[in-house]
Amino acid sequence: GRTSAAPRQALSAAGLDETAPFSELGPLHGPISTGGVQSPEQERADAVRRSLVGLCARYLCRATQRQRALDPVAGFHMRNGAALIAIHWAANPSSYGLEESASIMVNYHYDMPEVEARHSAYVAKGACL
Image 1 (cartoon, rainbow, N blue to C red):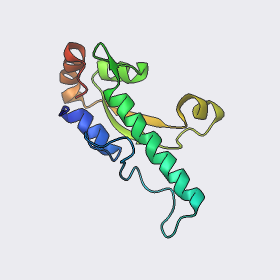
Image 2 (cartoon, rainbow, N blue to C red):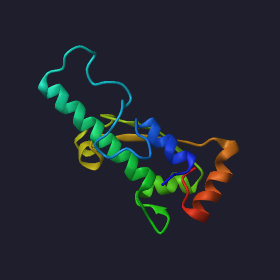
Image 3 (cartoon, rainbow, N blue to C red):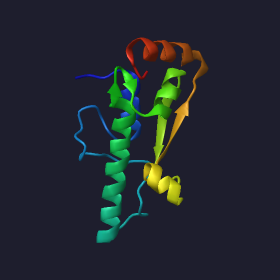
Image 4 (cartoon, rainbow, N blue to C red):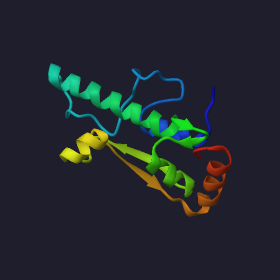
């Protein structure tokens, strides 16, 4: 089915579209290598990066219970009117970051003219606008 504009934008920012299966991922925040032929290790690392960032996008945009995000931080930001705008690979390579989120970090943006509408849509319908 179709999703609202904001989840489509977040999925698009992660190189996905609403019909893509988990294994079909596009470019995500630039390549790991600088170009040219990749070694098998680089190819595997790139595949892991694309898969995890894609799964993260789907988890943050689509995983809900009772119309609320399963992720408490995502729920906090969406409940307060923010939009998910970026997913960053290898952003927190500390041992805590690797264990907590596979080193992935995200950015939320509060567009002040849109905050009230985003908040209302999330509270009323669980919509991520």
